[in-house]
Amino acid sequence: MFSSLPTAASEFMNWDWSKFEPFYRELTERPLNAENVSGWLSDWTALTNIVEETYARLSVATSQSTADEDARKRYFAFLDSMFPPLQIAAQTLKKKLLDSGLRPAGFDIPLRNMHAEAELFREDNIPLFTEESKLSTQYDEIIGAQTVTWEGQELTLTQLLGVITQSPDRAVRERAWRLRAERQLADREAINALWVKFMNVRRQIAANAGYSNYRDFRWKQLLRFDYTPQDCKSFQRAIEEVVVPAATRIYQRVGKQLGVSSVRPWDMGRDNIYPIDLHPLHPFQSTAELEGKSAAIFQCVDPQLGGYFNTMRQEHLLDLDNRKNKAPGAYCTSFPVSKRPFIFENAIGVNDDVQTLLHEAGHAFHVFETNHLPYSQQTQVGMEFAEVASMSMELLASPYLPAREGGFYSDQDAAYALVEHLQNLILFWPFMAAVDAFQHWVYENHDAATDPANCDQKWVELWRRFIPGVDWNGLEAQEMTGWHRKLHIHQAPFYYVEYGLAQLGAVQVWRNSLEDQAGAVARYRKALSLGSTVTLPQLYAAAGAKFAFDAATLRMAVDLIESKIEALQPAHE
Image 1: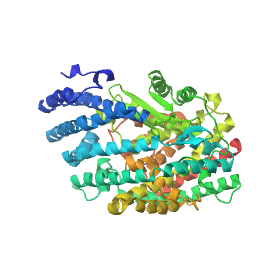
Image 2: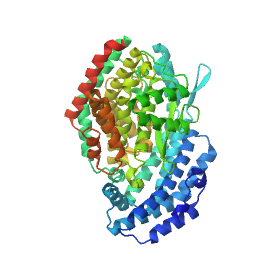
Image 3: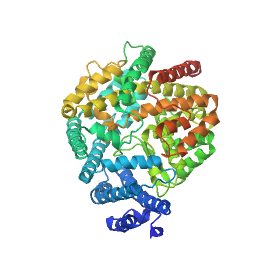
Image 4: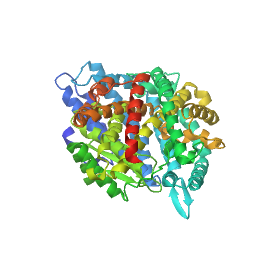
């Protein structure tokens, strides 16, 4: 029966529940024992892959064009008519396997995860998850529709950010920044209204599963077995102690370079934390050039990784250009039937676009490296390590940024790009801490946080605690609504500390590469290939790193970064 399952997206994208149901029924009714569990899991994997690729392709279509009503209807139809029975069927199969007491080889971690998922499952939550996904799409629609007229031309806010980050004229930057902020504030009430809906849905999801607060529910849903909320708060305190002073030194240095007494938001770029390009880099003129030079870089990092990226180019698995009605941000998703990743980005021709593609390619390589694993549950890696795959690639690729290696820059500009990237590593940790602390506060104080005005006040408090080096005087409305513009807060609650933890892991991978590049890359690839067959600390160890939250490990990372910046300064000045 399962040999008849389609193997091409064109054959299953229009399947309805009546097509899936016989396969799920057969798996449910098939006797399960030690002799046939491998085949049973393989058949379940084949079916799961079709479901996940269908969902991924429908979701991608809505982000590629937020104005595509047909794509939106097809995605919502899947959520409404397919998601509920598929979730119930998957829960039935999880229970069947767990009740069998069987422990297939290499399946300890997936079984641990299944136990948690089975314990959390409530049929009453299925329509609420559907509603949450729809609210997330509405957030994308609000953000994706934000454009302004700048010097007679309609620009997306991402494109206008390019003006802000690259203009040498501070007055021009301020005018562009204020125009962008004005357009964002125009949607303040819409995003606030959406927030209240998000909070009400999440409260009910947690209550249905027997949890008094959404944070505890979400912790288990995210399968966080290797650390606790208190570990995150320890990490926040370590960042405040070790990283915030280093970040403040960077902002002070930027102020001196600009000749100003304090840096203002229009002296910042993405997320209002990264300094503008004092030496603007223009690494490419087209997305074709971005793809081509990135391909050369990956070939230098590792020929197999280069081959993976070339496969993506040949099979049109990259959507990199920024355009109107394209959802914000960047991501990598997976098409598991096809055994291929897909990268989505909003490139406008700046250095950050290069770093973003390097980052997302790391996720893509993770997909390729886990394709050998037989069961879908073994490829579902926690984001705490998935982000090590992406952040490490940014650093492992850094020696090959110069044009003489096939990359984008002169030696001087490559040094500048690396200095900028290393500075941004330091600047990111305090921002991450603010976002993570905000989310802990939100779901520990659900009633208060359902009121957006309270969120505004809390965001300001945390922003000033972790990012005191930027002056927002007179810009209180813009400052307090910063949480509006961090999509993770709205669409993926608690998914942000992973970046900070993974960045600490990635710096350790990079430290190893400074002594032995080939050896570090080999360990990196080995760790990626393990998928979710071992614990999170074991994955870090396989990559040559320590899974850590402490000030001492952070201090090692910050000291290394600052020493490297100091060594590179003469080359990039």
